[in-house]
Length: 505
Image 1 (cartoon, one colour):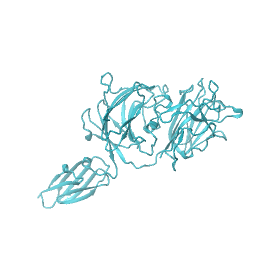
Image 2 (tube, helix red, strand yellow):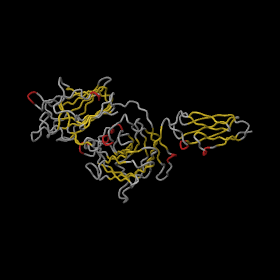
Image 3 (cartoon, one colour):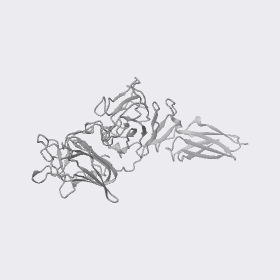
Image 4 (cartoon, helix red, strand yellow):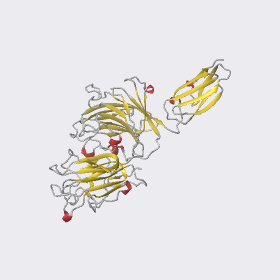
């Protein structure tokens, strides 16, 4: 169960520390000392240089953080997120002696238990660009620290994202080499290694050998695990994707590290959220523009075709629709019957782009491909510089690489694990042979999802029950006096796999 503090509300607190939480300080009052209010999340606040605690701040409040051009307190400029809207609360260091709002005291955030990753936003109103805070994160076994000093981040009243990912972090400190620093910290996210959870199903990935070959069954690449709930729980996929954070089209969603997004790579993933199982497509990886010098713009056109019950499908994520900042005229269209969805994306090199389709349920399936959807042939299905690879991500950290070729489709479908009955479609082959007066039968399934389950095979007049081991089952029986012994699969009942074992008389 996720425990989330959002704008204007506090969700019920779970008995155990959640794997993911976002803290926006929204329920605190201006000037409140922040210490252990978020102990339920395993997050504690203090000052790194002595007694005292950070304090809560809000936009337009009395001057407790720093003053703006008009003399009003401006600790928060209104970070925009898709779920909470404008985030106008945060924390800063306490007011100094004599009401000095500029005297800097370092902030400490402690994680107990340790956190696998954290991220937050720092608002720096400095006009000259010299007041840059530093982040020092500590991790244990033995205790060490890694320092992050962002020297090409947004300033002059803009939000700047700070994020690190290591294992395991015990605390993080926000410091400065200057004695005077005006800043505020908001939208803190913390995520920890998930506890093992039973996986109810996998997603089978297959890709045709060539465009239009339609030979998916012969080209199954493997299985991936969706992100289930828990460990990655959220009120909505919009919150996870965090489109609009910082007022731009860059996705700094919490799953950027979890999905291992990479520059010029397109990532497909499946995750649970309030809207149900969601198919997510993310192009590229978000990053600070101008820092690395490796940003490459990109474009892509995709078509997704759905099978099964499509009436509940919804296009819940639209990154940069119709040319919002950071994107180049993205367009998304769902056919009236929800069987086909098309997307046209264009992104600047420091941004991600993409979309999400929620509501996958029952015996669903989807094929996806880079293909011409605008119909004018003026642009390729994907920009070969902006898209150099694509993968299907898996929550177990084992993604599947896909062949990158226009119009070459990938098929994705759910396959259940445990308690599911073997069907004829799950049978790959049945072979029967007779040797030395004994009939040997070998059954092979299309995957190993039914390991341990029983099947019933008839050899001659006798039925044999055996268990599946991995993706195979074996049965042996005396051939009797007959030269030809009929063999059939009884449970499941699959006449198409009837065989005859020919024995010497």
